[in-house]
Length: 65
Image 1 (cartoon, rainbow, N blue to C red):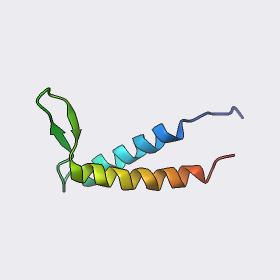
Image 2: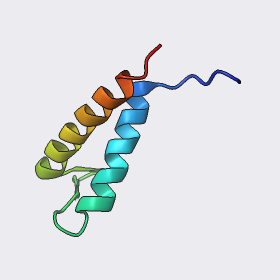
Image 3: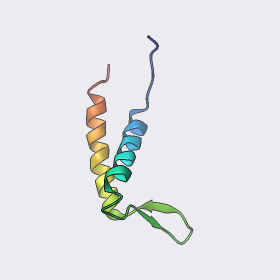
């Protein structure tokens, strides 16, 4: 079996983002836009993302060899 290398920080971030968008987009505002037109998470979305990220990091790290 071929070994697959994964950046666990990037994986946890992507999983947290996907869950945030999927599970919370109907109940909170996820994005804000600044004067330059750049989008970023609202404070509430960032707090949820941080919790999800921590959950995924803890889960992924259980599988380190």
